[in-house]
Image 1 (cartoon, helix red, strand yellow):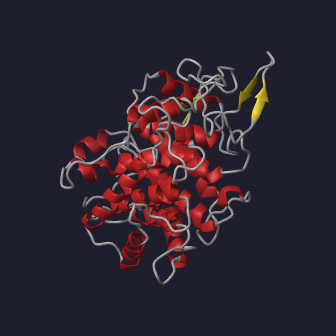
Image 2 (image 1 turned 90 degrees about the vertical axis):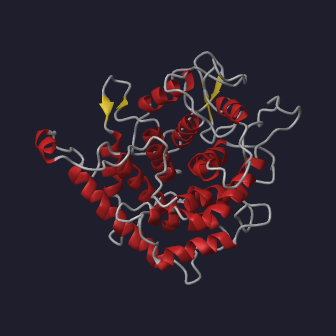
Image 3 (image 1 turned 135 degrees about the horizontal axis):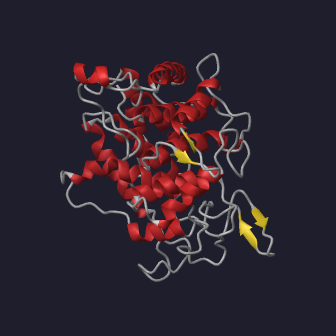
Length: 390
């Protein structure tokens, strides 16, 4: 694991070398200036985050290890970090604190939200690329896999929640947000168990997970739930959990009621489909990309206004990079360079001290540590996904 890990399986590999003769004929890199701006903004964001770290190694509160995990992920994915060198002492201290929060069941949490905290922590530990963290990663993976629902008849997905993952301890429902974070953590950390050094390891029931994902998507052809709608506004987008959308309902012209698809969870759905290894031409993947193109905006989280805006930005960067989308086709037939536009938006909203914050505080986005971590990670995702980057 002595390499810097990037957040998506679809990230483009680094160019190992450049041939001077070929370079003379190569077209200019359209992202060169933007890359430099992003590197500076990332450095400023990480510098601000470093100033917020507590002496014991954690960020913001001990109750939510996820906040520490997000800050650590932002720190180690900085393009200025040399993966061949040891991590700075403060970052290593953060990782040690994170591992100290791991419980006997493998979860990394303190006061509830076991899946959210563990998934975010496994992703951070994986991004750190340290061999010493691998046992904790393996235990965290087992915890996440154990939280996948299968109630009623075993292996039957006879309950709408089956295949999904909730906040932990099998609470009253599963949801796409926790499922996507768990799927991401499991996909990114898979290389840790693939070498066989930890013996036979359990795996997610991916078929059941795909069934759950399908049950969160407004797509009648692949969703067996009665509420699924192919109406023009919602077709292809995702909702929070089968039968419930955080964006509410919409009455259709034919008198039916549809559950409104919304932006952040639709990109979470796209990323999950990619990590579940669905092909680009799969109807579910095609439909959610079409929904994203029809609802493209950086001014709000479609369907939610300013609520969860920076979660939306981060999910967008990860999903479009993983899906290998260079330009996203829009409803009017044009295509948007999402990397350039999203990076420009994030650069323009950075505070003078290097931080970011959402004026809408839902889902903790009035917390600058959370939002700055989200934004730095989004910029890093864009940077690392640029084709042929230096």
